[in-house]
Image 1: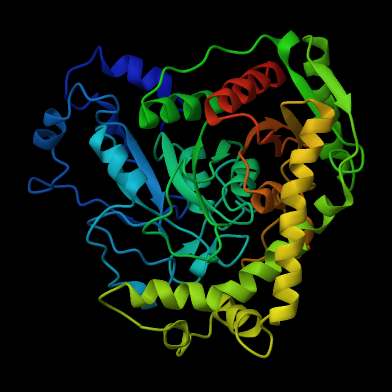
Image 2 (image 1 turned 90 degrees about the vertical axis):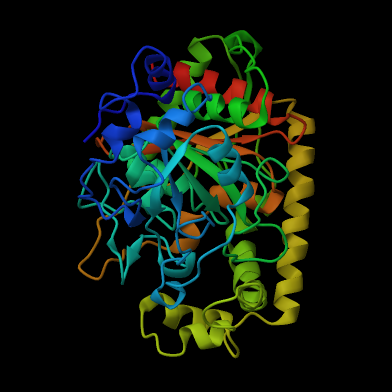
Length: 450
């Protein structure tokens, strides 16, 4: 396993070494997958497009030779986009997703497609075809889902970062459970072309996982070609905390970790503003679940219609499947279990209210971020059925607010008093652009992790 060396350190080192076995790329292709991280990996051999000769051409590019992995619901040319199901084994895209294409142009090397919940429809990354993703930090505990392979791959040292997708916390929950950091970037930051959808109205978002927000900040600056903003002085931080949201419905170890984070920020000179959140925030998870289950059928049929190979409808894709995910989709996203049009419209109305309430909350509090735990519990123990009994709406309580509001959110991890990782999330003010949001949040991460 690789040590958890930061991307920034790796890039600094790569300017000092020759293109040989000591180069970062060659280290990562030898990584042994003990965690069921990969669905597919690159071919390694003399005829591989990823041989040293090709890598030499990339020498001098900003991310030359740096490895990353991509959730297998996102298109990468040369790999099938399976979305975690064998029915899409021949779903070979002709072009990369636009973020993947940009990373390729910077010299980064996608070394494989990451395991996930089948059809991105789950929370445990227990895939019936590609195995249960193992949490590298605590192997008997859930890695989270659906982007569990991305988080486990970064936490376990398979690659320096991962590209994933986040609809209902799919990046942030696994990052919290596996002890790494995640960044949910609403469009137009990262486009969602070539992504297997859960929704059709903009709730699916591309994002990044890395060991720290410092690495994510560096990546974002290279991807979008700007100079990173300097760290924010603690005295210039204004951080909102809501007792009815940030500190409610938490297990004791999560509560202790959140209080400790708040204490450290206050002691460093940050201004902590105690301000309750609107009641609509508590409705976010249920509203988003209703939207997903209503939109999935039409959204995925549209996706399949754009593909030249494989099944042409979601019903055909699931026809001979008796997996847990397939059965849940049939029960919840197909009639008669599919949410009614009326229920769907109510959910969209609630999501719109949340979006407006987020704007009003930050206008009223004058804060840059609202801080809260990513999840109100630590990573559950995985059972023999590759599932856990946690209430999924409770699991998504905090992360669903930024998804409904379609605002920037990011999280980092600390070690809780019970040793399991605890995710600390920052919901960013809609008035702050991604450059300032990253500068603010990586400063918060630095203070809290001291």
